[in-house]
Length: 187
Image (cartoon, rainbow, N blue to C red):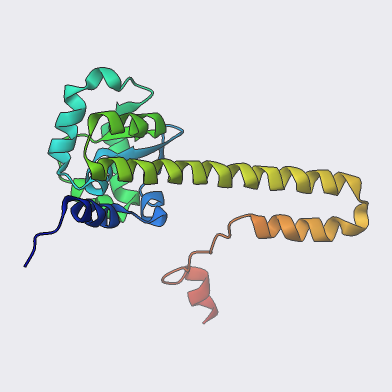
């Protein structure tokens, strides 16, 4: 049996390195008003242990100023662990995770030089751009709706109110467990 050629090996690596955008989107968090990705998630996407990932970043610390990367404080770590099921493993970790902004993720391509790192970086950058476009289109839609509402008279107010209601995320009321004393008196 012949061994695969170098080109075939690189094709196999390339095909396994493609990561669905939805998987990346779930890893983007909003912390300190910025969209960031945590070192543990990035290490997983790049296919390296978190310790190795952070060592590479540490060796190149001058490439990651505070607007590219910052360390979470204990409260932020606690909130992230509580709100993100995939980060439960961080609960008992003594260290605080690093958070990378979009610029920090872009800088990682110069630090991590494997073929997989390049492909993962491209996928992450595309996801950040897609999210930015979605936010911009939503804001643009809201602005256009407001302009139309000003332009047309009150007879369409009901239609505009219905569209606005459809645009806002629905909040399901929490079902109460147990009963109140007043309910017990009625029975």
